[in-house]
Length: 613
Image 1 (cartoon, one colour):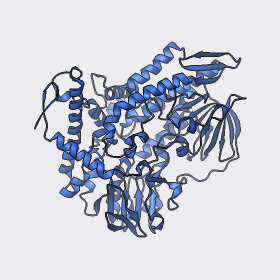
Image 2 (cartoon, helix red, strand yellow):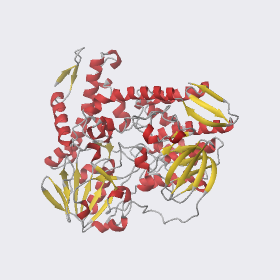
Image 3 (cartoon, rainbow, N blue to C red):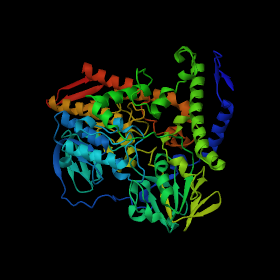
Image 4 (cartoon, rainbow, N blue to C red):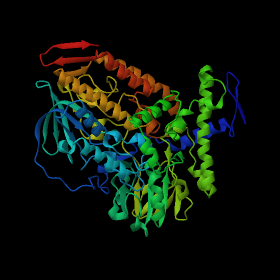
């Protein structure tokens, strides 16, 4: 059919009815809205059936540590590793890294489920490749290779000597008298540090649905972030031979479920895939790294490739698309320029919105066509089709997920409101009881709560100010790094800073900026570095304006953590900066270029204070 843009009347030919698509979007969204929204989950510690302890390392015994430092880094994932590497580059060596895990890796340490893989090209996702002399073996690396690279970084920068593993932070408090952070841990450590850098990551606390009867289940329950290979057999690459006589249910079809399904399908006697909302799954297009291509790479190749990727995602024209993946396709065509012959920016705003919506619908319809091509059973195909805009949820890419539903032992169980209840021998959906031996929860991590809830400790600043309480009405930071009332505290994880798709790119940039601040402060004998309240409030206001640009899009989305399960006030990005990522980091570079440190109060050891709000 022909759709005419509302103002210019420009005709666009599509093979669907946009009004019918909008109606279907609304209908499917309504099926999934729950009155308890983001409160429909519980943590692993609330469920005695699931062991939340570390299954990957032997318990470590050591004496308590009491030490004075220039910096302490909380978290040993890529955020912490990159921060530590940048501290080294800035001449800061008197620091420690604290992590609850038994090794470096963060999410790649805890998550070892079969099929685990990154969804951003490994050449731009895996950091410090040139520094460590490593080239990923495939375009999209699998979990074990990424974990090994985290360890490689740890060895390359001599970080194992400064790591405190299997150590959980219990409190962090600013000492006004000594201009130091005092960090205490579950091992009795007392660490005094000039700077506190938090790199815990936003998705760290596993969650499962709060389902009636779960405690009565007599079979095995596991969360994908605590996979039990003793029970399943096999390993991260599959071969789950101990499931050959087991009936298995996997609950959740987000990024994790998508990757694990094909391995469960190949080895389980019976697999039920319990789906609340279909995921938009595109083709992966993975392949081994070409040795000739790798040998041809020039100095700074990774930075050039990453910048090219980020610029395309943020709407900047590039002569060549170096990555050429689905992400650059989604974002590169998001404005619908490929649908009209005139520059999109020359159209009225109403026309721009209309053509962007059509471009989004076309992308979803392409997934529908892929499903119809692959899935043999029409009813199953219909159940797997996503009916919501592309970026309502993070799209996935996998070549084995859809074909799994053509196997005789695999059954799709659509459950728009989730599991009704769990029994001693299985689970119930829509009044039907399914008997299973194993329930795998691929249900992600806690979002929409305070960092203190997710990390298990609060940050207490000047005059006993609690970060949880200070952020109760919204985050107040300068650029997503520094917070008034919390001197020398730097947030490395996602905050009010630029971010699009590649979280490691964000962490690289944040680590670099934070380490530069620490290095500058130590060289200039700055004992306190703190933003003014006015500067932080101005940045919060700007950040919230950027969120408003996405509200209309997410407000009609199917429930998910992007839109707070239907409550935008609890959106994963509610406290983020959603403006142009390239322009955001240019702002930071410009801030360093002038080196006036606008918005920050610097206090030197000689008690000379300079404020430049």
